[in-house]
Image (tube, rainbow over all chains, first blue to last red; front, side, top):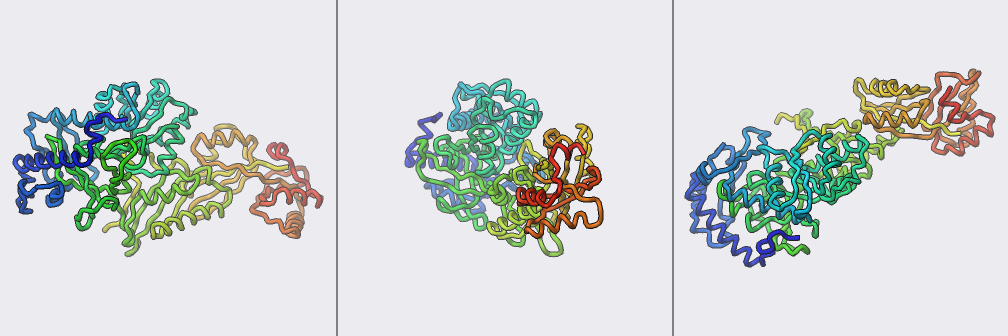
Length: 433
Length: 143
């Protein structure tokens, strides 16, 4: 199902013409309204008039998270505060949060993008959406909320936390769809089971899950435990919030980037060179329609690749593959680049293991060490020492074979690792570099 | 002739064992025999209890990974060479003992040893043929 046929199925040529027209407008606008962009363009020796085709986008300088911090809180806004009707901010795990603003039209654009996303997931006005994304400065809660209302569905504004209450509402209010992070979906399933509730017989049929990297095996786990179809949604507050890209129920392979509103590029993280379709690299976004907080070539740190092939759903928008990691949570262990999601994939290849793990990186002398703590599940439990030791050896070997690093594997008791209601934190880096 | 044993995964950290025994106490479950196998990182606690199903249920509810294994309980003459006579019989038929541990209580005049074999059926047959008493589960849980 498609929410906005006119735009979502535009022939590529018309779409690219529209993107170019909008790009010229936004470049022109930021140059004349945001001091930061004018300085950056001047330094690079480029003016808005130099942008004569969509390809010329690659001549513009990048914008980074650090630029956003340097201009905290409102320095990159392109409209006066009197035209801003809402602000959101990203969680500032390192340093100050980054602040974004929305005009009335931006909020409407965003609501439509979320309504498109829900429609791509097969939802209609007849659905009841349990929204467990956090409401507040985080864009997840309100973003999904406005989209659900735009669609005309019934929204349960649950927000995060109070897991037992969430389960009560999942049982009694009969929502047909849930929005939350993948790790929270699993946590809900487990908590429900512990409470003696059959979590597979709820009315839920779809999960719109995002805000953290996850794996195909984790998707299968969630689908089995909640008896739903789990779909991936992508977004980040800097670009607009959730609803930048969404997986469609027909294709279930890659997330359609809403290209009438954003231009996606893949670059080599080290050199900044634009990569061709199909090659993995860092995802970069330029917003085409945002008024209050336009962004030019924003480096997301998310690693993925773009799939240009036509999709059976009929959308002409390019798809991005599920994010495989972030260039900034990439660990470099003894010179080898490792993403936590790669280790998760290795663990999930082992029948019976669950995706609950913690990576601890330390430095002994001049040598990095990686310890992988994995929760033991009953399916892989053996009452013989050598049975468990061979499980540890198997994990060590698989990690070595797939990723080329030596790790110490430590089995830990079930449910002993922390569960996350928002984004999962699965790495402890104790190295003092 | 088989006895059900439960096993519990424990990390090597203070309070690990303690939390198992607390759960069992609160459920009024009596431990009949136990052994603890351990490495530097983790341990496996093996237990014979008076109510296997209930013990597994309450331990699961408290978040432990619990396994169930079949073992056998054999009466051993409580005198020098008693255990040796059994092991000699088993090794003569190439039956490998995975692990074993002793019961605290005696069964009449005899001691009771819990054995875990891979070839459990063959071991039972051999022991009975060799004149040893293999105790049924119901009897063991109540010793």
